[in-house]
Amino acid sequence: MPLGIALGLFLVISYVGCVLFYLLFPQAVLNHAVLALFLPGFNLLSWPSFLLGLAESFGYGWYVALVFAPLYNFLVSRWG
Image (cartoon, rainbow, N blue to C red; front, side, top):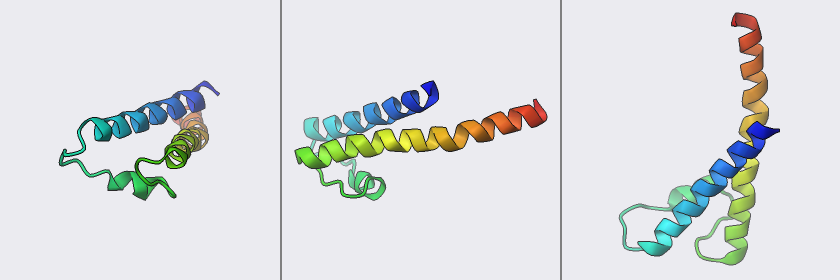
């Protein structure tokens, strides 16, 4: 449970940071097309899309936790 929440919040904070960076520096060379690639339905600068990105980011954190934690625990018990 803590791993899922931590990873979810980490990705949410990273997502918000990326969107804020774009809002503060729209002329920057950094391309935000990667957000649309990893977050289906994401369009920059609309509230519904922003909220969808938050939910998807948190969900990806849980996905990683649900896959990584059992694999890690299995390998630690096997070789630890």
